[in-house]
Length: 265
Image 1: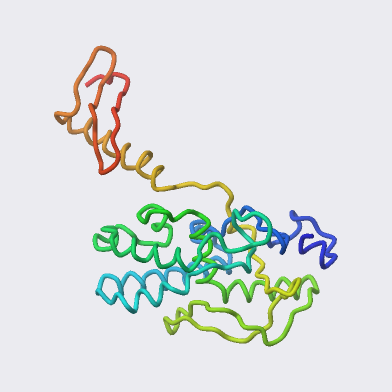
Image 2 (image 1 turned 180 degrees about the horizontal axis):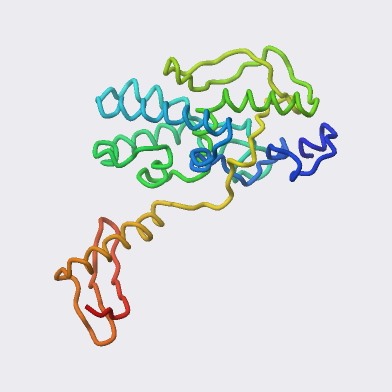
């Protein structure tokens, strides 16, 4: 049963501001930091500020070679079952970001040149520059960082819809952008079927899995190189009847024969 049914809200998903989840089953949606950064309502603005605070501090530690401090900071980005999002089957079980994933991703992050070059600037960069990071994992990372804002949002929605809250429940670790530390408090929480639940604004979730590292190479890097070689008329460009061909172009593991319709110069 969904939240609206459990608490007899008599409202459809269209009428609700939050995602109407079933607490017993993962909903195939993702908390999307890109959407958060592009929205201009109060929750999104403050959540985006907190995400940027965390990520900028993490990158600063890594670039200053403060590896132990950065690893501890990163270790709190583990599984988050409270939002009931992801691709798990059956009961939510945190398939997105378990403890082993956290350790592995951190080690891969250390090896990424995107850190030292300054190319990686936000949390979405994980999906492009760090192997094996999909939308599920980024969603879990984001949920942990902004948990305190999700808790406050959940309280507001529960008050609005007369859903009962439980006193003195652990918040779980969340990022405090003022102190630049992970905190854990006792607060009011929504408890459903004996588990804490976080409600999420439906405006900041996504379904489709866009901007994987392969798609980034295919649609950005490759297109950029195509245009540059054509613009500069490099040795890789040669004219053949009816077409212009760039023979085998390589970017790391990327290789492809590029063919365009003939242009007039």
